[in-house]
Image 1 (cartoon, rainbow, N blue to C red):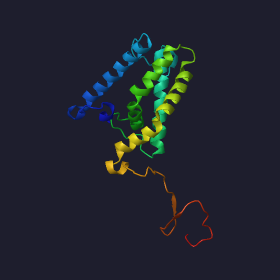
Image 2 (image 1 turned 135 degrees about the vertical axis):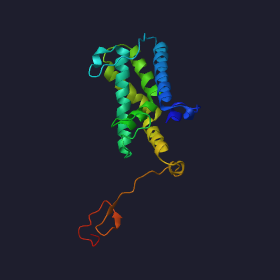
Image 3 (image 1 turned 30 degrees about the horizontal axis):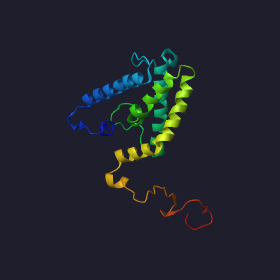
Image 4 (image 1 turned 30 degrees about the vertical axis):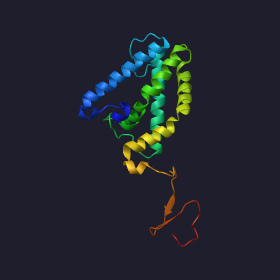
Length: 193
């Protein structure tokens, strides 16, 4: 997962604590970069749980963008039938894997969008940020990429290479006698049961 966040770097010799510190620096640097890019003053990340309105426009936009990314990640994790508590980087939380997946796209999508929206003014910042995230997610094809990234993390290399591109699930029913039968039809009068 760290290799996905830090392409071209070899994190294998670093401790988990060092990796977490590196991740924190990466995010802080991105906040500063995006604030400068859009011409906003940035005094650091300020988030008070339960008090969204206490933050300035940039912090509110960052919070709204992060919540969107968590929703996208949680939906994708659930749709793939993965355990949301499986943590690579985050641990000790029932949504550790969701947080890990959302963080893969934080500096590329969530933070830039948040600062762009904040630069346009403080009015209706939460809903404008959510709509802008929606648009960027569609623009970059994030849902498909998220599915591919999760498969790459959890499945052996050869299992993710499907030359046909067919990842359709084939649903069957199991009879009382251990037979798999085609789904989508009523077997009430057949001898399968």
